[in-house]
Image (cartoon, rainbow, N blue to C red; front, side):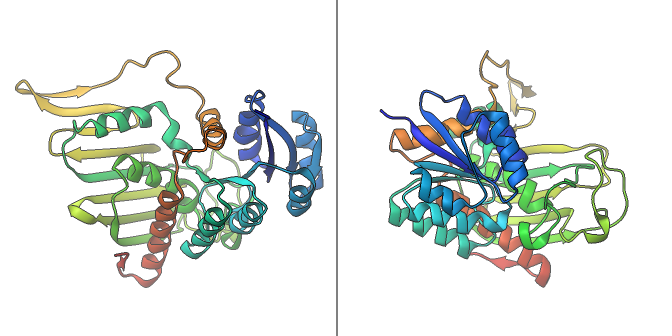
Length: 348
């Protein structure tokens, strides 16, 4: 079979650190023929760094000239929908970085374009590919936790405001800590829990630390033009009685940064990061930790790119489905609307 002709739109950090290296490692299956960025200097430099022959500043020109089979969309969030739809309408498969879109309406338009074209649309929720996440999925699907009734999600950085790029620009990104960082752990929690239907969302957001000069190991940012939230919290109610407590931050006065999803079930509980199974057995409380086998903790970026490529070649649905990505977008949208209205948002 001929190799897939692949392009990348947007050559910022996520493209250079994850997407482009992932495609390069699949040389038997992929020919990375072109990349595109609105900055001519950036795209030319990236093309030279990775030995990519063609560099464009207009994605439409790249689509029309290169006869691509697939692309990655690695742009600011506001451009996800128009670029993805333009590619799908040309019969090009799309791996779109998270979040799928700024709002549910955009996401649905993207899904409609994919369905009409009969092409793959996958979202870059790479946390699913971590060894801990895959192990948690196996444990939960085995039924060992029993019925899960409580989920706790923490995507908390004590200080980790991304001062580069456009992360603090509301019009380009749609939000801050929640839409940038929190969506990864939200998606992971929903996927591990079996994608329960969410019926109600109550959210609160704030920007207390991002709007003032502060200590930030990730470097400086423009606190005078900080337009998004640095902290978000929510209570999410699912059908059949499952509840989820959620918290995401770029900057928060806590002792340490935390990334974790924990599940409480009728038979046992589970922490994903670090992986630990918690239960009562043999007259005592047991906390069980894994001994990882060689190769289990491979690079998640490589695994994500490989999943996208192989889902196309094998003509199957990818691990991250469009309906799952849509639900994440719907929940995030509900969180922001709830925070603005100071009221719960009903989703069903």
